[in-house]
Length: 403
Image (tube, rainbow, N blue to C red):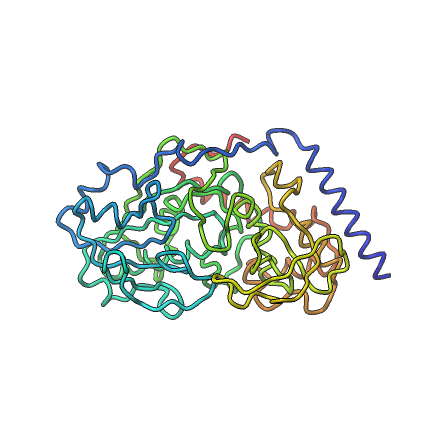
């Protein structure tokens, strides 16, 4: 019976791939544009430099906050902006620490400016850390997924600014996964740093739009609102993906990983390796006991993953780097990947305690375990997604989807 159960899922996975390849162009063909085709917020100096003149400034940024190859911090210093503090989120200001690693406060070696970590126990700037500042600038490249923690950092920064009476200026950037909305909407009981608000797994907004929504919908602590200014993009096309100029985080190294992340990120809450400790993280999955032996890899310690899952163990699994899903970029998550993996390795411990915090509910895990079809799983999201779309529409700064 178990073999038949496994084959049914794997057959469904193959059918799903055939279905995806036959979808209409409006559903599947998403252009991938050059990042330089957009004028990003931080490039529009006339829009925000007057707001920083004679002000003591704090900058919330990391390695992605760049103009070309130059950090926003270095650029603003050259423009005589008085930067007093830098706040670095997960992965640190220079982007050289792995997910979940504790980062200590320090001084930036290049500028000598104090760097305050916004990760670990200090996810939200403290009042004493803001008391000698007039305004904060937020400039981080997001990838549009609820459990990608930069929007949680943005939320806490907004709360801190509201509580301290400081203005926050958000430099908007393109969302490379901004061309669709999909996934379960977060249920309140699963709120965490992996998701603070009742939004879908993929929400189809830029960080500037998201900040406006969180602010005006009363989603900050005690429904407070911060003095928010968004520096908008020019020539942004929401129906396209974008090739990012730098890695958004150490283990999201390229375009394939960025586009696969919304679907593969769910595996963070499972026993599967996502390729940390290899040259292709978030582009593969694997486990020492995975039954399909056609693809394998061995995670090794690296500077960014000192102890990757299954370190030095041969893992078998799947390589998604040439997957039809990523070649066609349909406007939806790929649930077949996790459904098929669970069918191939239906162990009691397949899901861990973090899975429900990644999915945002307890239903998806139960649905996969109980062999609910992908079609039925998607139907269960319908009402919540429709409600979110109504909320989201109020805060869009750029033209919405054309489909």
